[in-house]
Length: 385
Image (cartoon, rainbow, N blue to C red; front, side, top):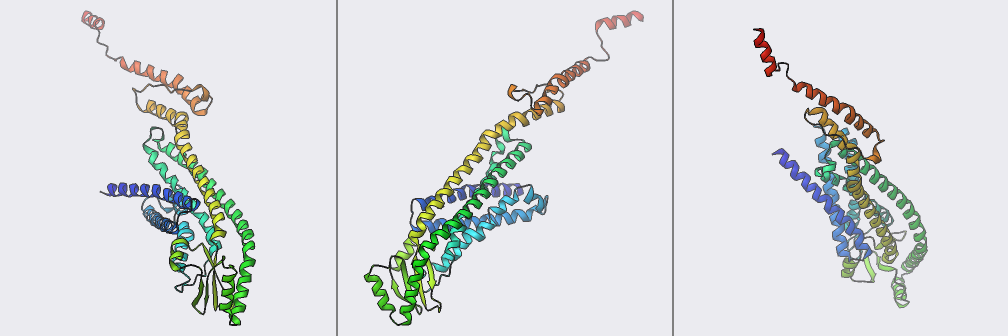
């Protein structure tokens, strides 16, 4: 019964891994093809649910490991660190942070919610979600039933190689992207910061001189409101470029930036949708490129390197082990000419040329009985009598 529950749990985890990979792809693909804000919200909530599920799964495995080989063994030798990297950090720093800022700012400005947010931080934190690709390493377990990955040694070596390769790629990509995005955001921000600062100073002067409505009228007449979504004074909305329905359907928490004056009486929500659009598309494009690189890397290891490892390591060992264990097993190890100088095949050559002939001779000697009751011997015995 316990084994059945474990099998069902592992099957559910495998299905969730496949789904989260699809969700990770769609989240970036949606940005590139400009899906609506509602779809992006669904993908964001789905990402949060996946991160929550895998966080709980990691904690359950960590707890259960205490009763088996120990938590340290699970973390170090059983890829527990992969489960950790693909769960808790993502929940806290990526999807969880996005959910908090979304619900803090949702529909935000008009109904009176203040967004003190961290939009620039969000842009960097979004990069972290590519770490979900580490969950693909868990898919290696599916290949256990394939012939050339049946041995525990092959499983361990293939998992180790895949893990190292993918982990190095993920860490390198994250470090490079964070550094690149930091400088890109800094440079891009300078282009818009002076404009926003001038508007805030003008709004503040107008509010102090009781000319805020006149200033807004001036902005509308000069069509200089393309960068402003909402102006709020004393908690009341005095200007809004769109209706609430437009904000709900077309704007996410990353599409606007919140500012207020030094006294906190005037609040302005700036439109940064266009500002973020090009950068988000570029970021999502890079994520998808990396996504497919990792998929190809894992597929190459599992489908190309695994049979090579079996041919040159596990198959020779398997044949020699059976030959040593089973007295009637006399199959020679096939030695490819290309790899004949490998240590394993040098050992196999000794096995073929020395051990098997010796084994055959021993078997032949054992077949000859000590009491050979052939007709000649019987005749001799009868004559003596």
